[in-house]
Length: 242
Image 1 (cartoon, helix red, strand yellow):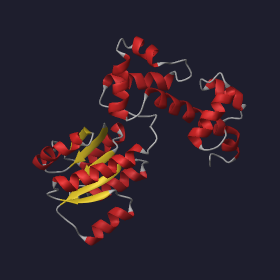
Image 2 (cartoon, helix red, strand yellow):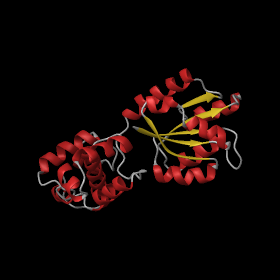
Image 3 (spheres, one colour):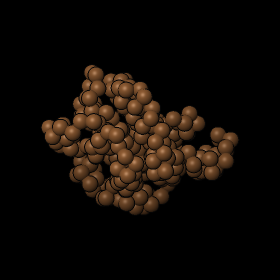
């Protein structure tokens, strides 16, 4: 399930929109919602939702201004504006800033489902993030543990035993809140650590492989190349331009 965040200064409109059945049917959950775009930015940075649905005309910040500020902070979420306004200048500015789509209120089921299905296709191609905070306290604890001890020999079973839960529960948490798997998430953490060590130190690649949790140097190189598009040595030589 993908996570969506909603921003609209009208509480009733916000409540009604977040309860649209189309979101559930298309695999989207509610990561959070706010009537204040400034407060919303704080939560969006923390929750890292896959998509943000925002009203255009709001006090303090417009939906487009909010998107642009979040983009400047490195936010990778897709943005959909939902507004009664369709002024050409606003629409042009929104798409120039790489917004995903622009829905006119009241958005019908057909239009909403169409946007959600296209969002699903785009989000499926995105790599898993290794620095996420989710609505699940249990999953957040697991993620923090993996971040701190990523070099240890982790398995789905060892994590399940440590948290005293069924392995299927762990799988479901990763699928529901991160749209990825336990193994893919752990691998991404290790690859990010490897990148930092390759660019920030002069340690030999074999040592970096071991530090990142790979006892097999050649396996590490193969995984790195699959994930980053080039060998670790080439990545270092190019300054991270794979």
